[in-house]
Length: 314
Image (cartoon, rainbow, N blue to C red):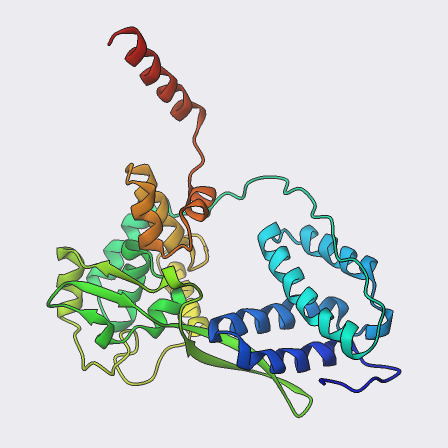
Protein backbone atom coordinates (compact mmCIF):
# COMPACT_ATOMS: atom_id res chain seq x y z
CA UNK A 1 0.00 0.00 0.00
CA UNK A 2 1.40 3.40 -1.00
CA UNK A 3 -0.87 5.48 1.21
CA UNK A 4 -3.36 4.65 3.90
CA UNK A 5 -6.76 6.10 3.20
CA UNK A 6 -6.90 9.71 4.42
CA UNK A 7 -9.35 12.56 4.09
CA UNK A 8 -6.80 14.60 2.20
CA UNK A 9 -4.06 13.16 0.01
CA UNK A 10 -2.72 15.51 -2.63
CA UNK A 11 -2.21 14.00 -6.05
CA UNK A 12 1.37 15.34 -6.21
CA UNK A 13 2.28 13.40 -3.05
CA UNK A 14 0.54 10.33 -4.35
CA UNK A 15 2.16 10.34 -7.77
CA UNK A 16 5.70 10.76 -6.39
CA UNK A 17 5.16 7.77 -4.10
CA UNK A 18 3.69 5.83 -7.01
CA UNK A 19 6.74 6.68 -9.13
CA UNK A 20 9.07 5.49 -6.37
CA UNK A 21 7.08 2.25 -6.23
CA UNK A 22 7.31 1.79 -10.02
CA UNK A 23 11.07 2.33 -10.13
CA UNK A 24 11.88 -1.34 -9.44
CA UNK A 25 9.52 -2.56 -12.18
CA UNK A 26 10.45 -0.42 -15.18
CA UNK A 27 13.56 0.33 -17.22
CA UNK A 28 15.83 3.19 -16.16
CA UNK A 29 15.06 5.08 -19.36
CA UNK A 30 11.32 4.65 -18.77
CA UNK A 31 11.68 5.90 -15.21
CA UNK A 32 13.59 8.94 -16.47
CA UNK A 33 10.80 9.70 -18.94
CA UNK A 34 8.07 9.22 -16.32
CA UNK A 35 9.83 11.47 -13.80
CA UNK A 36 10.24 14.18 -16.45
CA UNK A 37 6.53 14.01 -17.26
CA UNK A 38 5.50 14.08 -13.59
CA UNK A 39 7.75 17.03 -12.74
CA UNK A 40 7.10 19.19 -15.82
CA UNK A 41 3.51 18.47 -16.84
CA UNK A 42 1.46 16.74 -14.14
CA UNK A 43 2.52 18.42 -10.88
CA UNK A 44 2.26 22.03 -12.16
CA UNK A 45 -1.29 21.50 -13.44
CA UNK A 46 -3.06 18.99 -11.19
CA UNK A 47 -0.60 18.27 -8.38
CA UNK A 48 -2.48 20.21 -5.70
CA UNK A 49 -5.79 18.37 -6.19
CA UNK A 50 -7.05 16.19 -3.38
CA UNK A 51 -7.13 12.74 -5.00
CA UNK A 52 -10.76 12.41 -3.86
CA UNK A 53 -11.62 15.46 -5.98
CA UNK A 54 -10.11 14.12 -9.19
CA UNK A 55 -12.48 13.51 -12.09
CA UNK A 56 -12.54 13.25 -15.85
CA UNK A 57 -12.99 17.01 -16.35
CA UNK A 58 -9.77 17.75 -14.42
CA UNK A 59 -7.75 15.69 -16.87
CA UNK A 60 -9.64 16.82 -19.95
CA UNK A 61 -8.83 20.41 -18.97
CA UNK A 62 -5.20 19.37 -18.52
CA UNK A 63 -5.10 18.00 -22.06
CA UNK A 64 -6.59 21.18 -23.51
CA UNK A 65 -4.08 23.33 -21.59
CA UNK A 66 -1.14 21.27 -22.84
CA UNK A 67 -2.50 21.36 -26.38
CA UNK A 68 -2.62 25.16 -26.21
CA UNK A 69 1.08 25.08 -25.36
CA UNK A 70 1.66 23.26 -28.68
CA UNK A 71 2.58 19.91 -27.18
CA UNK A 72 2.16 17.12 -29.69
CA UNK A 73 -0.60 14.58 -29.24
CA UNK A 74 2.06 11.90 -28.83
CA UNK A 75 3.53 13.74 -25.83
CA UNK A 76 0.04 14.28 -24.41
CA UNK A 77 -0.73 10.57 -24.81
CA UNK A 78 2.45 9.73 -22.89
CA UNK A 79 1.33 12.06 -20.10
CA UNK A 80 -2.12 10.46 -19.97
CA UNK A 81 -0.54 6.99 -19.88
CA UNK A 82 1.36 7.99 -16.72
CA UNK A 83 -1.78 9.47 -15.20
CA UNK A 84 -3.85 6.36 -15.92
CA UNK A 85 -1.24 4.07 -14.42
CA UNK A 86 -1.02 6.11 -11.23
CA UNK A 87 -4.80 6.37 -10.94
CA UNK A 88 -5.23 2.61 -10.88
CA UNK A 89 -3.50 2.68 -7.50
CA UNK A 90 -5.51 5.72 -6.40
CA UNK A 91 -8.77 3.94 -7.16
CA UNK A 92 -7.62 0.77 -5.43
CA UNK A 93 -5.98 2.08 -2.27
CA UNK A 94 -8.02 5.19 -1.54
CA UNK A 95 -11.29 3.45 -2.41
CA UNK A 96 -12.29 6.20 -4.80
CA UNK A 97 -14.93 5.37 -7.35
CA UNK A 98 -13.21 5.00 -10.70
CA UNK A 99 -14.12 7.25 -13.60
CA UNK A 100 -13.61 7.04 -17.33
CA UNK A 101 -10.42 8.40 -18.81
CA UNK A 102 -11.55 8.19 -22.41
CA UNK A 103 -10.37 11.67 -23.18
CA UNK A 104 -10.71 13.74 -26.34
CA UNK A 105 -7.49 14.69 -28.08
CA UNK A 106 -7.78 17.95 -30.03
CA UNK A 107 -6.79 17.65 -33.67
CA UNK A 108 -3.28 18.92 -34.25
CA UNK A 109 -3.59 22.08 -36.30
CA UNK A 110 -0.60 21.56 -38.52
CA UNK A 111 2.22 19.12 -39.06
CA UNK A 112 5.11 20.66 -37.20
CA UNK A 113 7.87 21.89 -39.46
CA UNK A 114 11.18 20.46 -38.38
CA UNK A 115 13.74 23.11 -37.51
CA UNK A 116 16.73 22.33 -39.71
CA UNK A 117 19.85 24.24 -40.61
CA UNK A 118 20.10 25.82 -44.02
CA UNK A 119 22.93 24.76 -46.32
CA UNK A 120 24.72 28.01 -45.51
CA UNK A 121 24.31 27.52 -41.75
CA UNK A 122 25.63 23.98 -42.05
CA UNK A 123 28.64 25.22 -44.00
CA UNK A 124 29.46 27.96 -41.47
CA UNK A 125 29.11 25.60 -38.51
CA UNK A 126 31.11 22.79 -40.15
CA UNK A 127 33.88 25.18 -41.16
CA UNK A 128 34.17 26.44 -37.58
CA UNK A 129 34.21 22.95 -36.04
CA UNK A 130 36.82 21.65 -38.49
CA UNK A 131 39.09 24.63 -37.81
CA UNK A 132 38.56 24.27 -34.06
CA UNK A 133 38.33 20.51 -33.68
CA UNK A 134 38.43 19.44 -30.04
CA UNK A 135 36.96 16.91 -27.63
CA UNK A 136 34.02 19.18 -26.98
CA UNK A 137 33.42 20.23 -30.58
CA UNK A 138 33.51 16.75 -32.11
CA UNK A 139 30.14 16.02 -30.50
CA UNK A 140 28.52 18.56 -32.82
CA UNK A 141 29.89 16.65 -35.81
CA UNK A 142 28.59 13.38 -34.37
CA UNK A 143 25.08 14.82 -34.22
CA UNK A 144 25.14 16.62 -37.58
CA UNK A 145 26.86 13.85 -39.58
CA UNK A 146 25.83 10.70 -37.65
CA UNK A 147 22.48 11.68 -36.11
CA UNK A 148 23.35 11.15 -32.42
CA UNK A 149 21.00 12.55 -29.79
CA UNK A 150 22.55 14.93 -27.26
CA UNK A 151 22.20 12.37 -24.43
CA UNK A 152 23.97 9.77 -26.57
CA UNK A 153 26.82 12.16 -27.38
CA UNK A 154 27.28 13.09 -23.71
CA UNK A 155 27.31 9.42 -22.62
CA UNK A 156 29.74 8.31 -25.33
CA UNK A 157 33.06 6.91 -24.13
CA UNK A 158 36.07 5.98 -26.21
CA UNK A 159 35.37 2.33 -25.43
CA UNK A 160 32.24 2.76 -27.57
CA UNK A 161 34.25 3.87 -30.61
CA UNK A 162 35.94 1.04 -32.50
CA UNK A 163 38.37 2.88 -34.75
CA UNK A 164 39.90 -0.34 -36.04
CA UNK A 165 36.58 -1.51 -37.49
CA UNK A 166 35.23 2.03 -37.92
CA UNK A 167 32.08 1.57 -35.84
CA UNK A 168 30.43 3.71 -33.15
CA UNK A 169 28.43 1.61 -30.67
CA UNK A 170 25.52 3.55 -29.15
CA UNK A 171 24.69 1.79 -25.87
CA UNK A 172 24.03 4.56 -23.31
CA UNK A 173 22.37 7.92 -22.90
CA UNK A 174 22.43 10.61 -20.20
CA UNK A 175 19.15 11.89 -18.77
CA UNK A 176 17.99 14.07 -15.91
CA UNK A 177 15.53 12.44 -13.53
CA UNK A 178 13.45 13.83 -10.68
CA UNK A 179 13.07 12.12 -7.31
CA UNK A 180 11.36 12.89 -4.02
CA UNK A 181 13.49 12.66 -0.88
CA UNK A 182 12.30 13.82 2.54
CA UNK A 183 9.45 15.79 0.95
CA UNK A 184 11.92 17.62 -1.29
CA UNK A 185 12.00 17.24 -5.08
CA UNK A 186 15.55 16.71 -6.28
CA UNK A 187 16.99 16.24 -9.74
CA UNK A 188 20.03 14.27 -10.74
CA UNK A 189 21.75 13.17 -13.92
CA UNK A 190 21.95 9.44 -14.65
CA UNK A 191 23.50 7.31 -17.38
CA UNK A 192 20.95 4.79 -18.61
CA UNK A 193 20.28 2.45 -21.49
CA UNK A 194 18.70 4.14 -24.53
CA UNK A 195 14.92 4.45 -24.44
CA UNK A 196 14.24 1.74 -27.04
CA UNK A 197 15.94 -1.42 -28.29
CA UNK A 198 16.46 0.17 -31.70
CA UNK A 199 18.32 3.07 -30.06
CA UNK A 200 21.06 0.55 -29.26
CA UNK A 201 22.74 0.69 -32.64
CA UNK A 202 26.00 0.67 -34.57
CA UNK A 203 26.92 3.63 -36.73
CA UNK A 204 29.68 3.29 -39.34
CA UNK A 205 32.54 5.80 -39.30
CA UNK A 206 33.44 7.25 -42.69
CA UNK A 207 36.92 8.48 -43.62
CA UNK A 208 36.14 12.11 -42.78
CA UNK A 209 34.92 11.29 -39.26
CA UNK A 210 37.73 8.77 -38.75
CA UNK A 211 40.30 11.47 -39.43
CA UNK A 212 38.75 13.73 -36.79
CA UNK A 213 38.35 10.99 -34.16
CA UNK A 214 41.76 9.34 -34.51
CA UNK A 215 43.54 12.56 -33.51
CA UNK A 216 41.43 12.89 -30.36
CA UNK A 217 41.66 9.26 -29.21
CA UNK A 218 41.86 8.73 -25.44
CA UNK A 219 41.73 5.77 -23.03
CA UNK A 220 38.63 3.58 -23.09
CA UNK A 221 37.12 4.85 -19.82
CA UNK A 222 37.31 8.49 -20.91
CA UNK A 223 34.22 10.38 -22.09
CA UNK A 224 34.61 11.66 -25.64
CA UNK A 225 33.26 15.18 -25.01
CA UNK A 226 35.13 15.97 -21.81
CA UNK A 227 38.40 14.17 -22.57
CA UNK A 228 38.41 12.80 -19.01
CA UNK A 229 36.51 10.46 -16.69
CA UNK A 230 33.77 13.04 -15.90
CA UNK A 231 30.84 13.40 -18.29
CA UNK A 232 29.42 16.68 -19.56
CA UNK A 233 25.69 16.73 -18.90
CA UNK A 234 23.28 17.63 -21.75
CA UNK A 235 22.14 20.92 -20.22
CA UNK A 236 25.74 22.14 -20.02
CA UNK A 237 26.48 21.00 -23.56
CA UNK A 238 23.38 22.75 -24.91
CA UNK A 239 24.58 26.00 -23.36
CA UNK A 240 28.01 25.50 -24.92
CA UNK A 241 26.41 24.92 -28.33
CA UNK A 242 24.31 28.08 -27.97
CA UNK A 243 27.46 30.11 -27.30
CA UNK A 244 29.01 28.79 -30.51
CA UNK A 245 25.95 29.85 -32.50
CA UNK A 246 26.13 33.34 -31.01
CA UNK A 247 29.85 33.62 -31.76
CA UNK A 248 29.13 32.74 -35.40
CA UNK A 249 26.15 35.14 -35.60
CA UNK A 250 23.86 32.25 -36.47
CA UNK A 251 20.21 32.23 -35.49
CA UNK A 252 19.28 30.35 -32.35
CA UNK A 253 18.04 26.79 -32.74
CA UNK A 254 17.88 23.84 -30.39
CA UNK A 255 20.68 21.30 -30.33
CA UNK A 256 18.23 18.65 -31.54
CA UNK A 257 18.02 20.56 -34.84
CA UNK A 258 21.38 18.98 -35.72
CA UNK A 259 19.75 15.54 -35.66
CA UNK A 260 16.77 16.82 -37.62
CA UNK A 261 19.16 18.27 -40.19
CA UNK A 262 21.00 14.95 -40.45
CA UNK A 263 17.74 13.11 -41.15
CA UNK A 264 16.39 15.72 -43.56
CA UNK A 265 19.65 15.69 -45.53
CA UNK A 266 19.42 11.92 -45.94
CA UNK A 267 15.78 12.07 -47.04
CA UNK A 268 16.54 14.79 -49.60
CA UNK A 269 19.39 12.65 -50.98
CA UNK A 270 16.84 9.83 -51.56
CA UNK A 271 18.46 7.48 -49.04
CA UNK A 272 16.04 4.61 -48.40
CA UNK A 273 13.83 5.14 -45.36
CA UNK A 274 14.81 1.89 -43.65
CA UNK A 275 18.47 2.94 -43.56
CA UNK A 276 17.57 6.41 -42.27
CA UNK A 277 15.39 4.90 -39.54
CA UNK A 278 18.13 2.53 -38.36
CA UNK A 279 20.76 5.28 -38.28
CA UNK A 280 18.42 7.43 -36.19
CA UNK A 281 17.61 4.56 -33.85
CA UNK A 282 13.86 4.96 -34.28
CA UNK A 283 11.66 2.25 -32.80
CA UNK A 284 9.97 1.73 -36.18
CA UNK A 285 10.12 3.09 -39.70
CA UNK A 286 6.68 4.73 -39.43
CA UNK A 287 8.10 7.15 -36.86
CA UNK A 288 10.75 8.21 -39.38
CA UNK A 289 8.17 8.60 -42.14
CA UNK A 290 5.80 10.66 -39.98
CA UNK A 291 8.56 12.96 -38.77
CA UNK A 292 10.57 13.57 -41.90
CA UNK A 293 8.79 12.45 -45.06
CA UNK A 294 6.32 15.06 -46.29
CA UNK A 295 6.12 14.91 -50.10
CA UNK A 296 5.63 18.20 -51.88
CA UNK A 297 3.24 18.69 -54.80
CA UNK A 298 6.26 18.58 -57.09
CA UNK A 299 7.26 15.19 -55.64
CA UNK A 300 3.75 13.89 -56.25
CA UNK A 301 3.69 15.26 -59.80
CA UNK A 302 6.99 13.54 -60.58
CA UNK A 303 5.58 10.22 -59.33
CA UNK A 304 2.50 10.55 -61.55
CA UNK A 305 4.69 11.49 -64.54
CA UNK A 306 6.92 8.46 -64.01
CA UNK A 307 3.92 6.14 -63.75
CA UNK A 308 2.25 7.64 -66.83
CA UNK A 309 5.41 7.30 -68.93
CA UNK A 310 5.90 3.73 -67.71
CA UNK A 311 2.39 2.78 -68.86
CA UNK A 312 2.26 4.77 -72.09
CA UNK A 313 5.72 4.19 -73.51
CA UNK A 314 6.82 0.79 -72.28
